[in-house]
Length: 100
Image (cartoon, rainbow, N blue to C red; front, side, top):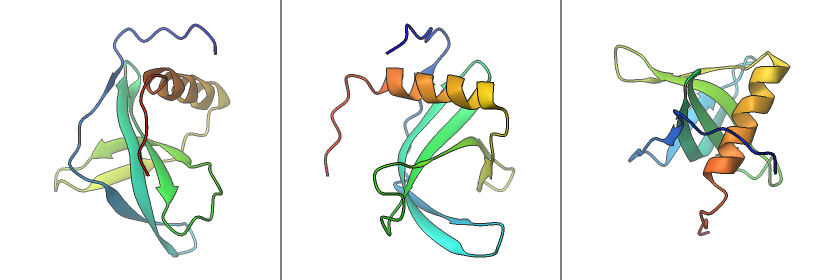
């Protein structure tokens, strides 16, 4: 594990446990919310499809709530941003035990 600077980073509490995302080809995928977290660069969300299609890995997106209170997911296309957000997620969750 790299020494990741967590200054300004925090886990965002949420009462939501799942959401349905629609892929570019119109397919709906129901996902469990693993974690929503904030960094100085913005908010991110980690999702795992409930159908088990990712086999232990999940999805990492930029995250926001629109004016109507609906979640908005945005792909992370920059490799450096993705690597940085992934490292923060791992560091924030280093000492958290997940229950199944």
